[in-house]
Length: 291
Image (tube, rainbow, N blue to C red; front, top):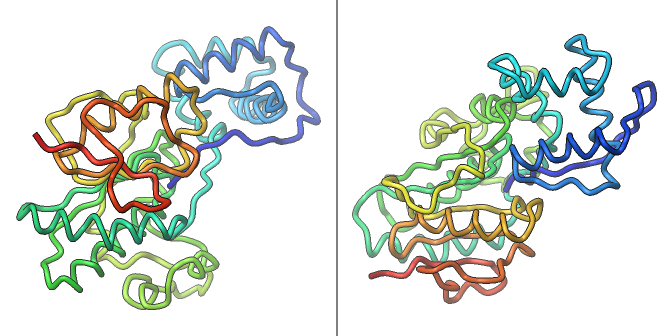
């Protein structure tokens, strides 16, 4: 799962940001993304805001701030800045226990209960590694069950740049080491330069990507899914927002559907209508109750 996190960088060569300006910027980030930024990450914000404002021709934080919050041009600039303020930490098969639970426990139960197409949602998908991981694992699992590969995986993220990488489906060759050999051979194509590889077209046709701010998740929707992966994302939100996001995600599940969170992302109260999934072991999984 994508983790959108705040890191730290040096601030040499950039103007100083006073506490009032810092407070205004972190309030804007939290209001628009929901993510909180502790004071010890001030250097990260100063570096990334400062470098971006210089690129677009601003010399001070206040004038750049006013530009970002104003009009259509400001909205476009905010989208570019968000890419600087979120670090897309992800990799293929990052959580093998969660993938194993999906393959061994969730898919057989869903296949028994449903004849329709299986729909899976990766929330905070970043550059797409988790989406393609799920597509590989589901394809192989359905083959073993001798079932047709009737499924789709949707990835959503706040970063337009990350989504562009995900749609292209091309990655540095070093990322191949995270993919099991049998899946490398079946679903990956090394490009002629030998420095990158591409996800095979047949697998890319099983996935799609869309821009979405997780704060916009509603408690209910006409579009429901069978499985939701939301891992290593909620840890960047405060407790109240975390609870609201989980409740919203739960509302998107079909009865019997599964929500998988990352370790350490447990919410204080289990949202109404879902319960801890049985036989999940160390995987933090919730199941939507059937009527």
